[in-house]
Image (tube, rainbow, N blue to C red; front, side):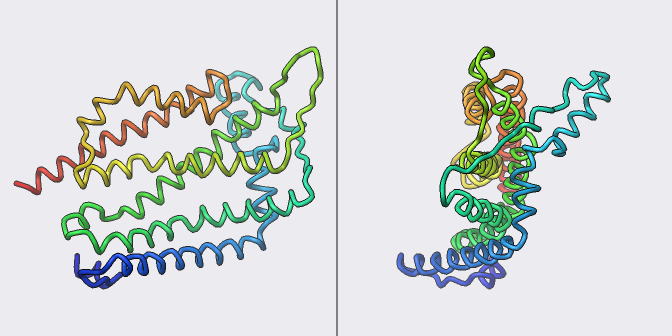
Amino acid sequence: MAENNENINPKPKGMSFLDHLEALRWHIMRSALALVIITSVLFFYSDFIFDTILFGPTKPNFITYRALCKLSEWLHLGNSLCVKNTVQFKIVNTEIWGQLTMYMWGTFIAGFIITMPYILWELWRFISPALNPKEVKYTRGIVLGASFLFLLGVAFSYFIIIPWTVTFLNSFKLSSGTNVENLFNVRSYISTVTTLVIWIGVVFELPMVTYILTSIGIVSSAFLKKYRKHSVVVVLIVAALIAPPDVASQVFISIPLYLLFELSIFVAKYVEKRKLKESR
């Protein structure tokens, strides 16, 4: 296994610091090239990226809203869960370069999300030659797992968090007696959507980070259990930052975030059992 790993990304033993920097530079350059190529291709699909994806949560026929309507019918609640206020959602541009800048930014973020598995693979190719055969065995499949968790976080943010955030902010009023119309700047809207998507994708990497840290002996399941109560507070704080300021939304978003922490404990136990079994 170690021999195959060296063939994938050979690095002579006793490399200097500058040699490592040179190797890292080529990994970064290949990742950047892949990102540029994917982003360039996506420029030809800008209508789909913006009309269908980025601005999708502002439309009443968005898949999440349709699913909520069906759930409402299934629970015999009438139209109580259906979202209707997105019909009046208005986005404006107040900067001369605003639409062009957001066109480039939105396409870049889409390209970054698609390229992420390859970027993780290049990172793994840089790190793996420094690992011993046992460490390589422990981290087998790490690129696939990390890519899956990141994309899962992106999907959770896009289909759950963003629709809630959009509908809440669109319907929020300072005062019921004064009509203050919500006109959202395109920069503000796209920045909010892309920031939530990326950061939630990163947060979903927690079980994979735990797997790595447990494998190299930095974190243990006992350590995670010790701070389980503290994790609840952290989860609630994160949910308060990324969710609309209503209790129902924050609780709903806190549940999967806390489950990620519990999954991390399970992952740490799994790694510890495997290491104990192999040490006998």
